[in-house]
Amino acid sequence: MLFESLDKIRRNSIMSAILLIALGSVILICPESYIDLLTHVFGYALIVIAIVMILNFFSSNKSIMEYLKFIGALVLGLVGICVLVFNDDIMRVLADLFGFLLILDGARTLLHSFVYARRSERKGWWVLTILSFLLIVSGIILFNNPWCNTPAQLLKVIGGTVLFSSLVSAIRLVWTWPIRDTKGGN
Image (tube, rainbow, N blue to C red; front, side, top):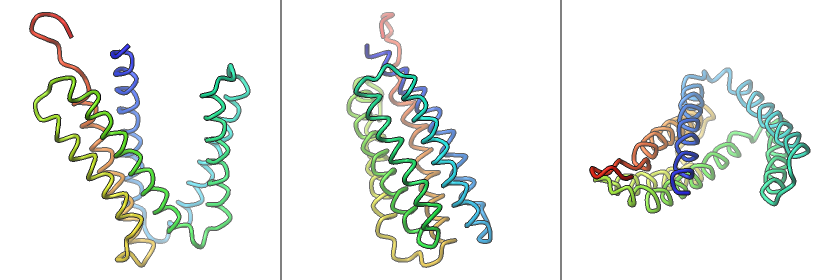
């Protein structure tokens, strides 16, 4: 049971690290003239992801988890529509959204550091705990960033924090995977 959970965490960590590296890089290298295009692409991507999740719901076995995913898909679709409709104030909303996601990712990493990394008996597992607190702090900073007045500056802060989150995801992958005991067990 524990190894099935760890294998699922490993796959999720690899995919989230790759996606966050790509997203952070695109956000950091995006010129100021393309910010509107980037927000439109983000809005349409959220709507497409929501549609795919809703279609998966109709072909699923209708468990409680599937209903929760359906509600999440509806929320994602509404956020995507809001991104497209309220394009003028969207940079502040995106900063709040990424801040919230960083806080959630930090909380998840904190949980993994205590549940899995500490149990794997690796030296320095507490580094993952410190990094998870830094993720939470970076999410709080995105909520309250008074120094970013232009969308370009705000986009650079969002890109930097997303790249930091991808680094923490990669480190989480290393520290949550158990090492083989010298006696042959796990």
